[in-house]
Amino acid sequence: MAPPRPPSTLTLGRARLPVSYDRADWHYEGDFPSSLPTECGGTHIGMFLAWAIHSGLEGDELREDAAAALEEVRARRMTGRDFLFNQCDGKFWESDLSEEGNEFAKWYYAPDTAYLADYERELGDGLETLYHVADTWENYDKLAKVIDQRFDEWRRRPHRV
Image (tube, rainbow, N blue to C red; front, side):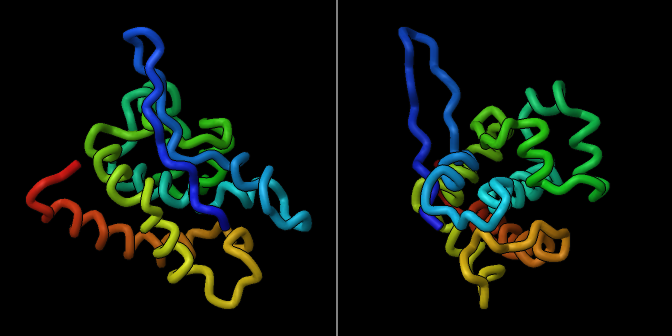
């Protein structure tokens, strides 16, 4: 799995445009197994997004526009990947997270891809590629424990991003 492209700040005049942390199409339009559905290019993104939702770190825009879907994720009736495609068009934006969520994501999710290393270590053993990770709550639970540890580590840092 190729690492996500690092977020970049794009400014148009004085307006700051949204930053994308990761996009499923970056994965399924690249070196991607043809035997898998394209949604598998967003499993890793969806799991992080589900963790953020379960941790109350989703952005105001999602709270306003996707309240019912957020509750579906919290109740485990919708996976983070399904949320990513149904509510976010397969794209993980800075606006999907709260201020604290963004600070953490900039430290952990991108640009150094520590998240992908943890994802691979926890869920990738014995799989053909990381795109073969099943989008299940059981896998999410394994990964969420690690993200929780990273989040605690990040919070203990004397200087945050």
